[in-house]
Amino acid sequence: MPPQPTKSRVSIRKARSTQPISVVTGGAGFLGSHLVDLLIARGHKVIAIDNLVTGSVENIVHLGGHPDFKFIKQDVTEFLFIAGPVDYVWHFASPASPIDYLELPIQTLKVGSLGTHKALGLAKYKGARFLIASTSEIYGDPLVHPQTEDYWGNVNPIGPRGCYDEAKRFAEAMTVAYQREHGVETRIVRIFNTYGPRMRMNDGRVVPAFISQALRHQPITVFGKGRQTRSFCYCSDLIEGIYRLMLGSHPGPINIGNPHEMTVLEFAEEIIRATGSKSRIVFKPLPQDDPKQRRPDIALAQQFLKWEPKVPLAAGLEKTIAYFRGRV
Image (tube, rainbow, N blue to C red; front, side):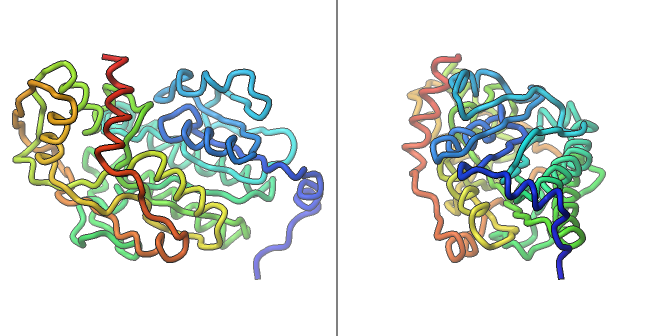
Protein backbone atom coordinates (compact mmCIF):
# COMPACT_ATOMS: atom_id res chain seq x y z
CA MET A 1 0.00 0.00 0.00
CA PRO A 2 1.52 3.38 -1.00
CA PRO A 3 2.26 5.90 1.77
CA GLN A 4 -0.63 8.17 2.73
CA PRO A 5 -0.30 11.88 1.88
CA THR A 6 1.09 14.07 4.63
CA LYS A 7 -0.98 16.97 5.98
CA SER A 8 1.09 19.43 3.96
CA ARG A 9 0.38 17.53 0.74
CA VAL A 10 -3.32 17.32 1.54
CA SER A 11 -3.47 21.06 2.22
CA ILE A 12 -1.63 21.75 -1.04
CA ARG A 13 -4.18 19.67 -2.95
CA LYS A 14 -7.06 21.54 -1.35
CA ALA A 15 -5.47 24.86 -2.27
CA ARG A 16 -5.42 24.04 -5.97
CA SER A 17 -7.55 25.96 -8.41
CA THR A 18 -9.31 24.39 -11.36
CA GLN A 19 -6.47 25.57 -13.63
CA PRO A 20 -3.72 22.91 -13.75
CA ILE A 21 -0.25 24.14 -12.83
CA SER A 22 2.79 22.60 -14.53
CA VAL A 23 6.50 22.96 -13.83
CA VAL A 24 8.72 22.24 -16.86
CA THR A 25 12.45 21.83 -16.24
CA GLY A 26 14.46 22.52 -19.38
CA GLY A 27 11.55 24.69 -20.47
CA ALA A 28 13.67 26.89 -22.75
CA GLY A 29 15.08 23.93 -24.67
CA PHE A 30 13.99 22.54 -28.04
CA LEU A 31 11.41 20.07 -26.77
CA GLY A 32 10.75 21.77 -23.43
CA SER A 33 9.64 24.98 -25.13
CA HIS A 34 7.29 23.14 -27.47
CA LEU A 35 5.81 21.38 -24.43
CA VAL A 36 5.33 24.76 -22.71
CA ASP A 37 3.43 26.04 -25.76
CA LEU A 38 1.12 23.02 -25.81
CA LEU A 39 0.44 23.21 -22.07
CA ILE A 40 -0.50 26.89 -22.23
CA ALA A 41 -2.69 26.23 -25.26
CA ARG A 42 -4.52 23.58 -23.21
CA GLY A 43 -5.17 25.80 -20.24
CA HIS A 44 -2.21 25.15 -17.95
CA LYS A 45 -0.33 27.72 -15.95
CA VAL A 46 3.34 26.97 -16.65
CA ILE A 47 6.50 27.63 -14.68
CA ALA A 48 9.56 26.94 -16.84
CA ILE A 49 12.97 26.38 -15.23
CA ASP A 50 16.19 26.45 -17.27
CA ASN A 51 19.81 27.49 -16.70
CA LEU A 52 20.17 28.28 -20.44
CA VAL A 53 23.31 26.17 -20.86
CA THR A 54 21.77 24.48 -23.91
CA GLY A 55 18.34 26.17 -23.87
CA SER A 56 17.63 29.63 -25.26
CA VAL A 57 15.45 32.56 -24.27
CA GLU A 58 14.66 32.87 -27.98
CA ASN A 59 12.54 29.71 -27.69
CA ILE A 60 10.22 31.28 -25.10
CA VAL A 61 10.48 35.01 -25.84
CA HIS A 62 7.05 34.94 -27.51
CA LEU A 63 5.57 34.09 -24.09
CA GLY A 64 6.95 37.19 -22.38
CA GLY A 65 4.17 38.89 -20.43
CA HIS A 66 1.77 35.96 -20.84
CA PRO A 67 -0.37 35.73 -17.67
CA ASP A 68 -0.05 31.94 -17.52
CA PHE A 69 3.72 31.77 -17.98
CA LYS A 70 6.64 32.32 -15.63
CA PHE A 71 10.33 31.71 -16.29
CA ILE A 72 12.93 30.95 -13.62
CA LYS A 73 16.60 30.86 -14.59
CA GLN A 74 18.09 28.17 -12.37
CA ASP A 75 20.16 25.02 -12.41
CA VAL A 76 17.82 22.16 -11.52
CA THR A 77 20.55 20.39 -9.58
CA GLU A 78 19.97 23.04 -6.91
CA PHE A 79 16.99 23.08 -4.52
CA LEU A 80 13.76 23.86 -6.38
CA PHE A 81 11.44 26.24 -4.55
CA ILE A 82 8.06 26.88 -6.11
CA ALA A 83 5.43 28.81 -4.16
CA GLY A 84 1.89 27.47 -4.20
CA PRO A 85 0.39 24.29 -5.63
CA VAL A 86 1.82 22.24 -8.50
CA ASP A 87 -0.10 19.53 -10.36
CA TYR A 88 2.50 18.27 -12.84
CA VAL A 89 6.30 18.22 -12.97
CA TRP A 90 7.76 17.58 -16.44
CA HIS A 91 11.51 16.90 -16.13
CA PHE A 92 13.04 17.76 -19.52
CA ALA A 93 16.29 19.35 -18.32
CA SER A 94 19.40 17.75 -19.83
CA PRO A 95 21.93 18.24 -22.59
CA ALA A 96 20.60 16.00 -25.34
CA SER A 97 22.99 16.19 -28.29
CA PRO A 98 26.34 14.43 -28.70
CA ILE A 99 28.26 17.70 -28.91
CA ASP A 100 26.67 18.95 -25.69
CA TYR A 101 27.12 15.90 -23.53
CA LEU A 102 30.63 15.23 -24.84
CA GLU A 103 31.58 18.78 -23.82
CA LEU A 104 29.56 18.68 -20.59
CA PRO A 105 29.84 15.10 -19.30
CA ILE A 106 29.77 15.91 -15.58
CA GLN A 107 26.92 18.41 -15.93
CA THR A 108 25.00 15.79 -17.94
CA LEU A 109 25.47 13.20 -15.21
CA LYS A 110 24.53 15.72 -12.52
CA VAL A 111 21.27 16.79 -14.18
CA GLY A 112 20.31 13.14 -14.67
CA SER A 113 21.03 12.29 -11.05
CA LEU A 114 20.88 15.35 -8.78
CA GLY A 115 18.49 17.20 -11.09
CA THR A 116 16.11 14.26 -11.25
CA HIS A 117 16.33 13.92 -7.45
CA LYS A 118 15.43 17.60 -6.97
CA ALA A 119 12.57 17.46 -9.48
CA LEU A 120 11.16 14.30 -7.89
CA GLY A 121 11.48 15.93 -4.47
CA LEU A 122 9.39 18.85 -5.72
CA ALA A 123 6.74 16.47 -7.08
CA LYS A 124 6.69 14.53 -3.79
CA TYR A 125 6.31 17.67 -1.66
CA LYS A 126 3.59 19.14 -3.87
CA GLY A 127 1.71 15.87 -4.39
CA ALA A 128 2.22 16.35 -8.14
CA ARG A 129 2.45 13.82 -10.93
CA PHE A 130 5.98 13.50 -12.35
CA LEU A 131 7.22 12.68 -15.87
CA ILE A 132 10.83 12.01 -16.81
CA ALA A 133 11.85 12.66 -20.41
CA SER A 134 14.06 9.63 -20.95
CA THR A 135 15.55 8.58 -24.26
CA SER A 136 16.05 5.80 -26.78
CA GLU A 137 19.74 6.10 -25.86
CA ILE A 138 19.06 3.90 -22.82
CA TYR A 139 18.92 1.04 -25.35
CA GLY A 140 22.50 1.85 -26.41
CA ASP A 141 23.62 0.10 -29.60
CA PRO A 142 20.64 -2.26 -29.56
CA LEU A 143 20.80 -5.98 -30.24
CA VAL A 144 16.99 -6.12 -30.45
CA HIS A 145 15.17 -4.48 -33.34
CA PRO A 146 12.82 -2.67 -33.23
CA GLN A 147 13.30 -1.65 -29.61
CA THR A 148 10.55 -2.60 -27.18
CA GLU A 149 10.18 -1.21 -23.68
CA ASP A 150 11.08 -4.53 -22.04
CA TYR A 151 14.53 -4.54 -23.70
CA TRP A 152 17.30 -3.75 -21.18
CA GLY A 153 19.72 -2.34 -23.73
CA ASN A 154 23.34 -2.69 -24.80
CA VAL A 155 25.15 0.28 -23.27
CA ASN A 156 28.85 0.98 -22.80
CA PRO A 157 28.91 2.80 -19.42
CA ILE A 158 32.48 4.09 -19.88
CA GLY A 159 32.27 4.99 -23.57
CA PRO A 160 31.96 8.56 -24.88
CA ARG A 161 28.17 8.38 -24.82
CA GLY A 162 28.03 6.76 -21.39
CA CYS A 163 27.56 10.02 -19.50
CA TYR A 164 24.23 10.61 -21.25
CA ASP A 165 23.07 6.98 -21.48
CA GLU A 166 23.78 6.22 -17.83
CA ALA A 167 22.38 9.54 -16.61
CA LYS A 168 19.05 8.67 -18.21
CA ARG A 169 19.12 5.08 -17.00
CA PHE A 170 19.77 6.33 -13.47
CA ALA A 171 16.97 8.90 -13.85
CA GLU A 172 14.53 6.11 -14.74
CA ALA A 173 15.68 4.06 -11.73
CA MET A 174 15.30 7.07 -9.43
CA THR A 175 11.82 7.77 -10.82
CA VAL A 176 10.65 4.22 -10.16
CA ALA A 177 12.21 4.30 -6.68
CA TYR A 178 10.19 7.42 -5.79
CA GLN A 179 7.04 5.72 -7.05
CA ARG A 180 7.67 2.60 -4.98
CA GLU A 181 9.08 4.23 -1.84
CA HIS A 182 7.05 7.45 -1.64
CA GLY A 183 3.95 6.75 -3.71
CA VAL A 184 4.69 9.54 -6.21
CA GLU A 185 2.66 9.18 -9.40
CA THR A 186 5.30 8.85 -12.11
CA ARG A 187 5.52 8.52 -15.88
CA ILE A 188 8.51 7.54 -18.03
CA VAL A 189 8.71 8.40 -21.73
CA ARG A 190 11.54 7.16 -23.95
CA ILE A 191 12.00 9.71 -26.71
CA PHE A 192 13.34 8.64 -30.11
CA ASN A 193 14.90 10.95 -32.71
CA THR A 194 12.81 14.11 -32.90
CA TYR A 195 13.19 17.16 -35.12
CA GLY A 196 11.57 20.50 -35.81
CA PRO A 197 11.95 24.26 -35.36
CA ARG A 198 14.03 25.51 -32.39
CA MET A 199 16.76 22.90 -32.78
CA ARG A 200 20.19 24.48 -32.49
CA MET A 201 22.05 24.57 -35.78
CA ASN A 202 25.36 23.41 -34.29
CA ASP A 203 24.13 20.86 -31.76
CA GLY A 204 25.64 17.93 -33.65
CA ARG A 205 22.44 15.99 -34.27
CA VAL A 206 21.83 14.68 -37.75
CA VAL A 207 18.83 16.86 -38.69
CA PRO A 208 20.32 20.31 -37.98
CA ALA A 209 23.75 19.17 -39.20
CA PHE A 210 22.47 17.99 -42.57
CA ILE A 211 20.08 20.92 -43.07
CA SER A 212 22.67 23.57 -42.22
CA GLN A 213 25.25 21.96 -44.49
CA ALA A 214 22.72 21.66 -47.32
CA LEU A 215 21.51 25.26 -47.03
CA ARG A 216 25.13 26.45 -47.22
CA HIS A 217 25.82 24.05 -50.14
CA GLN A 218 28.59 22.48 -48.06
CA PRO A 219 29.46 18.78 -48.16
CA ILE A 220 27.04 16.72 -46.09
CA THR A 221 28.95 14.58 -43.59
CA VAL A 222 27.78 10.98 -43.31
CA PHE A 223 29.56 8.77 -40.81
CA GLY A 224 30.55 5.23 -41.76
CA LYS A 225 28.85 4.10 -44.96
CA GLY A 226 25.53 5.64 -43.91
CA ARG A 227 23.89 2.26 -43.45
CA GLN A 228 22.99 2.91 -39.80
CA THR A 229 19.27 3.55 -39.44
CA ARG A 230 17.25 6.22 -37.67
CA SER A 231 13.57 7.15 -37.42
CA PHE A 232 12.45 10.77 -37.24
CA CYS A 233 9.40 12.08 -35.38
CA TYR A 234 8.17 15.66 -35.80
CA CYS A 235 8.15 17.65 -32.56
CA SER A 236 4.39 18.32 -32.42
CA ASP A 237 3.64 14.60 -32.73
CA LEU A 238 6.10 13.77 -29.98
CA ILE A 239 4.77 16.38 -27.55
CA GLU A 240 1.20 15.21 -28.10
CA GLY A 241 2.23 11.66 -27.21
CA ILE A 242 4.02 12.81 -24.08
CA TYR A 243 1.02 14.90 -23.02
CA ARG A 244 -1.24 11.85 -23.35
CA LEU A 245 1.18 9.77 -21.30
CA MET A 246 1.25 12.27 -18.44
CA LEU A 247 -2.52 12.60 -18.31
CA GLY A 248 -3.17 8.90 -18.85
CA SER A 249 -3.00 5.97 -16.43
CA HIS A 250 -0.01 4.00 -17.79
CA PRO A 251 3.19 4.71 -15.82
CA GLY A 252 5.53 3.74 -18.64
CA PRO A 253 8.14 3.41 -19.80
CA ILE A 254 6.55 4.02 -23.19
CA ASN A 255 8.40 4.65 -26.44
CA ILE A 256 7.35 7.77 -28.34
CA GLY A 257 8.77 8.13 -31.83
CA ASN A 258 8.19 7.41 -35.48
CA PRO A 259 8.57 3.75 -36.48
CA HIS A 260 9.35 4.67 -40.12
CA GLU A 261 13.00 3.66 -40.46
CA MET A 262 15.52 4.91 -42.99
CA THR A 263 19.28 4.84 -43.38
CA VAL A 264 21.32 7.93 -42.61
CA LEU A 265 22.46 7.97 -46.26
CA GLU A 266 18.83 7.95 -47.44
CA PHE A 267 18.08 10.79 -45.04
CA ALA A 268 21.01 12.84 -46.37
CA GLU A 269 19.70 12.38 -49.91
CA GLU A 270 16.21 13.45 -48.75
CA ILE A 271 17.64 16.65 -47.23
CA ILE A 272 19.44 17.50 -50.47
CA ARG A 273 16.18 17.08 -52.41
CA ALA A 274 14.11 19.03 -49.90
CA THR A 275 16.51 21.99 -49.82
CA GLY A 276 17.39 21.99 -53.50
CA SER A 277 21.01 21.98 -52.40
CA LYS A 278 24.11 21.50 -54.54
CA SER A 279 25.80 19.70 -51.67
CA ARG A 280 27.55 16.40 -52.18
CA ILE A 281 27.84 13.63 -49.61
CA VAL A 282 31.17 12.86 -47.97
CA PHE A 283 31.92 9.94 -45.68
CA LYS A 284 33.89 9.99 -42.42
CA PRO A 285 34.74 7.25 -39.88
CA LEU A 286 31.90 6.07 -37.67
CA PRO A 287 32.14 7.45 -34.10
CA GLN A 288 32.62 4.99 -31.23
CA ASP A 289 29.40 3.34 -29.98
CA ASP A 290 27.26 5.01 -32.65
CA PRO A 291 24.01 2.95 -32.74
CA LYS A 292 23.65 0.86 -35.88
CA GLN A 293 19.87 0.63 -35.66
CA ARG A 294 17.28 2.83 -34.00
CA ARG A 295 13.55 2.30 -34.42
CA PRO A 296 10.83 2.35 -31.77
CA ASP A 297 8.21 -0.27 -31.25
CA ILE A 298 5.17 1.93 -30.48
CA ALA A 299 2.61 -0.80 -29.75
CA LEU A 300 2.19 0.37 -26.14
CA ALA A 301 1.66 3.98 -27.22
CA GLN A 302 -0.94 2.87 -29.74
CA GLN A 303 -2.73 0.68 -27.21
CA PHE A 304 -2.68 2.86 -24.09
CA LEU A 305 -2.35 6.39 -25.48
CA LYS A 306 -4.22 5.95 -28.77
CA TRP A 307 -1.22 7.70 -30.27
CA GLU A 308 0.84 7.40 -33.41
CA PRO A 309 2.73 10.03 -35.44
CA LYS A 310 0.70 12.01 -37.97
CA VAL A 311 3.13 14.46 -39.63
CA PRO A 312 4.79 13.03 -42.78
CA LEU A 313 8.55 13.50 -43.07
CA ALA A 314 8.22 15.81 -46.08
CA ALA A 315 5.81 18.14 -44.23
CA GLY A 316 7.93 18.18 -41.08
CA LEU A 317 11.11 18.86 -43.02
CA GLU A 318 9.45 21.73 -44.89
CA LYS A 319 8.71 23.52 -41.60
CA THR A 320 12.12 22.71 -40.15
CA ILE A 321 14.04 23.85 -43.23
CA ALA A 322 12.04 27.10 -43.29
CA TYR A 323 13.10 27.73 -39.69
CA PHE A 324 16.76 27.12 -40.47
CA ARG A 325 16.76 29.25 -43.64
CA GLY A 326 16.29 32.32 -41.48
CA ARG A 327 19.33 31.40 -39.41
CA VAL A 328 21.94 30.40 -41.97
